[in-house]
Amino acid sequence: MNNLALSNFLNSLERNGLLPAVANKEIQNFIGNQTKSVGKLFLVITALIGATFISAGVFSIVSHNWDDFPKNVRGVISFVPVIAGIFIYYLAVFKHSKSTSWIEASSLFLMLMIGASMALVSQTYQMDGDIDFFIFVWLCLTIPLFYIARASGIAFFYLLLACKFLVPHFGFSLFGPSEFDLNEKYYYFWFFLLGVLPHFYITLNKQADKQGFRSIFLGWLIGVLFLVAMPVIVKSGYLWWTTSIVIGYYLLGKRFYNGNISSLGRPFQTISLLVLFYTLIYFTVEEIFPYIFGVNDIRQIGSWNDEQLSFYFSGFALMIILTIIGIRQRLKGVELNRYILLTPILVLGLFSVHYIKEELDFDMVSFACLFVNFFVLGFGINALIKGRRYSSVLYMFYGLFVISNLMWVRYFDMDVAFWLKGLFFIGVGFVFLLIHRNSQDEFES
Image 1 (cartoon, one colour):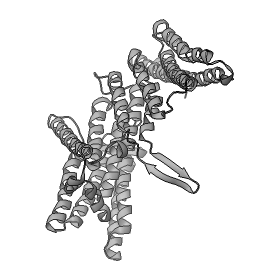
Image 2 (cartoon, one colour):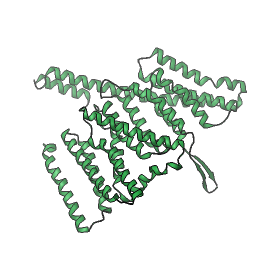
Image 3 (cartoon, helix red, strand yellow):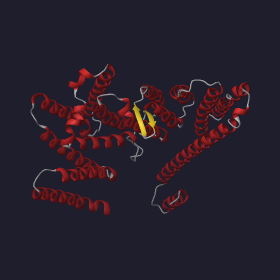
Image 4 (spheres, one colour):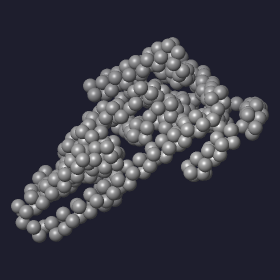
């Protein structure tokens, strides 16, 4: 049903006395605001796409027969793209300051024109061809665009270019890759990520727990990118950093995004729950248990350099601080998932089990893995209960997925008699049928 048909339907309900006039007005205002928000998002996206194609066209025209021009002429023409970008940006910021789409498009256009002028100048005067230095300067000149007119659309291109400092150096020979070296300039990525975080904070609505498209977009972009980049930009203490992501993302999402309805509108909470699920599933497998905790074993500290030590202890401190913040908020009455708050304590307990085994030769790994299995099972059941309590079908699906995946993994590696395994899974199946029966009347009525 489109908005016009829905409006006519609401008006007919009001005429027939089935809907109060005040409620009809509020519903129509809500629908109108939603339509305007989607329309603004469409305008911004089309403007960004248009700016990208125009930038490519300008660069193509300027570089046409480039080598046929004298060197001095090429030097002057090299600045044409950035001058054009600054002029368009000036018009958008000072003449059309109320138009979000113009500001976003002009910011992206200026960013791309800066890169184009830098490339032309570098080619004209045969400057140092270090691509890392080129991108570093380009991104440094881009950072002010986030704060002059608060443009957010350029964040995607900005962080995508910053990922260049995470890409390893590959060497190729006749028979394929011959060398592989990690990028030692990864700390540039940290610098540029921190450069955009204040802009992200500025876009958040601090007075409410519901955010708009801009904050949702930046939340997904920063949240996913940091998670993917973490194995490269963090040099040790991955277990502590992963746990910090789980609890830190969750607390951030509950504070600023909890009022959003869908999971797409809650980027940090969604990422936190997915990371938590896969982390806990790994803890239930006894075979990879020594590897997970062996990598983070503090007994290896003698072979670490200062860089690794700083990451290890900063990750551990961050995990402890976030856990304390979460527990204090829950004690104050904030509704937080107890299983997420208990995860750091669980991780420390499992680490202690690994350490006791290695130092005292006292093996409790099997018992620890069994405990984690029950922890994950309880976490899944808790998600089912909360999903039903708040009528959130998606949250119920998440709990169902957690339990089903755990049972599937255990079906293949549970080292018990087949008849006992069979009875156990038949019992689990009856539990799910019982859940189905209790929920059937609610969802089919």
